[in-house]
Amino acid sequence: MVHCGLCGAGDATELFDKGILDIKTVDPAIKPYLDAYARFMLESGAHWVDIEKRLYDGVRGYAGTLDREGTINGERCILDIKTGPPQPWHRVQLAGYADLIREPGEPVKRWGLWLQ
Image (cartoon, rainbow, N blue to C red):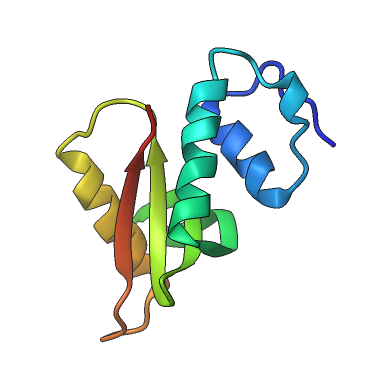
C-alpha cells in the first residue's frame, strides 16, 4: 500500500483506482474529494483500461495526460477529473484527448467529473 499524506486529489484517485492507496494516510483535506470519487465509481460502474495516460500528437503539436480511459455503462469513454470550478476550456481539453485516442469515426464519450 502507498502512503498518501502529501498527495493531491488527482494522485489519491489514481492510487485508489490502482488499488494501492492506504486510505488511512490520506490528508483530511483531500478525503472529501476521494470519498466523492469513490461514490462516483460505485454509482457509475466505470471500468478503466488506462489511468493517467500520456498522449502526444506530433503532427498537430499538442500533448496531455488523460486521467482515465475505459467504459461507463458499456460505452467507451474518457474521463477528466477536476477539483476546481468548471471552466470553458475543459470541453476543449476533453475534445483534444478524445481526438488523440479514437480511430476516425469511432465514438468516444467525454466525461468531466468535478469533485467537491
